[in-house]
Image (cartoon, rainbow, N blue to C red):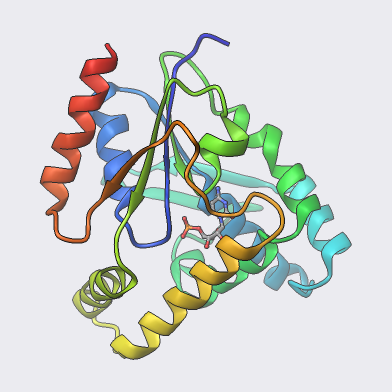
Length: 223
Ligand code: C5P
């Protein structure tokens, strides 16, 4: 295909979601939140009474995943499974654990591969995830790998949750992030890794607006 793709990979909490949404809006391109597909798969298991560790059953769920994404007037993306709104549920810490557990199952990744590639539609796609540049869109002309220290990512998540009125412990969040990083980078299939041709952007000490400016500069250089 000649339809362009920009991939944005990296660990959780590095600002990928924010940056790739801004990028897609700015370019008027489609957006793939691949993490949401893994999150919905985990949530579907809870709904269907399937254990996250039951690989064949989870893969079956992923193959037939009745998921839909719709954009509300507010701009918020609503995620539904079998018509049931799961937008909130998939964003909890448990939702993140479920996602990274089912994401380590090779047959689940296979089941979701073509579905992710189907998002590549004109005029272009911004794809957010862990393996967008390495596995799903290896031919993407522009790849970013966004990262930040685990402490900084835990801090950001902490502020988000506090702003939402959720009581959480920073130490617990840091532990969760480190655990998820370890699971995502040590799994045998599609481990979290920058593509060889990815531009690495470290946002530990850089405000998100500056990160976006850096990314946009690369996009415009690419023409
Ligand atoms: O990006 P997000 O935090 O929503 O992803 C949730 C989990 O889904 C990640 O921790 C990772 O285990 C998994 N994931 C993945 N490959 C992707 C996107 C997400 O394995 N492309």
